[in-house]
Image (cartoon, rainbow, N blue to C red; front, top):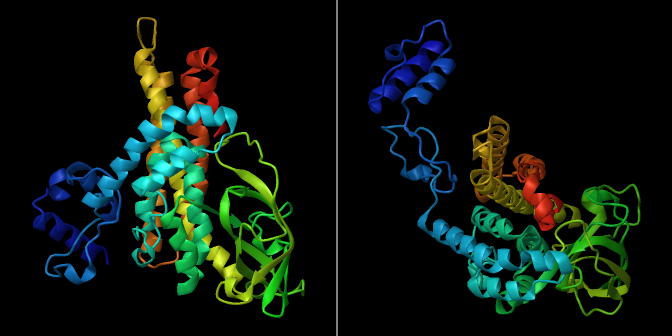
Length: 425
């Protein structure tokens, strides 16, 4: 096997006019994997890491000359969307971010502009009026928007979470009715799963739905619902099987509930530690009547729908965290190149340079993680493993980068208390 691997490595370098392992002076007692790693570091031509969305179709690959590695370049269309979102974040979001963070005012003006530019609801299929963007495309946009303000970006991006159950499980009529209106107007929707006693533990939710004739009656309470007070309609997960021992994949049902349904009452707006521009509230359901036509797939399918929605919406959450981390690094770097101590810019001091380097390492690895998770789901493969890694890693990196940025900018932090906003977000 080692001989075969060695022959393939040699063929690779012959085909690509690269220097062989022997020419680099590597000793044969090293493993072939170690040889390959060192030769690639010394000889291979790498392109800047962007994304893996432009891999060639397997049917188009020339089998006479095997393909090696991955292509991380963005397509021209992806670059256009990324640049549009970047420009929008810097010109429309960043200038008003401090105001919305301070007041908690919902950013309707920003939302209307984003809707007009197509920076919202891009994942809705073209047949229902949307752009039909991939998850990776949406993440590219989301990262740039979060650079401007994660609170405003959350308000914009939360529509994706609310719409996802309808996208993956709705029938044609449901999609036309509830997704179509999101294209026509800058409307919001919300994902109602979390409860006072159950968050990620979806199987522990208590909200119940009882079937009565041709409709269901919902009773219960949801908590920490993003866009809760601004939504035009809600996805609601409720227990329809009264047996507490019933398996989760049979016990819950997903419903679409209109905002103006009698008995549906949003609570007060929560003033969160961060992301204050988004609207977070509890929602109470008291004898809320929902027609059977608003059930997604059928009774008992809700748990799988909710889990499927998480797989598609965790990559954008990770991308948003990377956007925040990138903003923290950008501001810390700018300050470090301007601020001087002992006659030199502080970035030239190792104590500061190492902090900036660690921030950059975390950001690049987190970006690759969300790209991998988005790419997997776009290829039609289950990405639960990768999406969970991306979300967990990016959240930790964002928190650390925000803390490190405050350390680098400690003098400015004292002079400008509003600069700690990245740490709270």
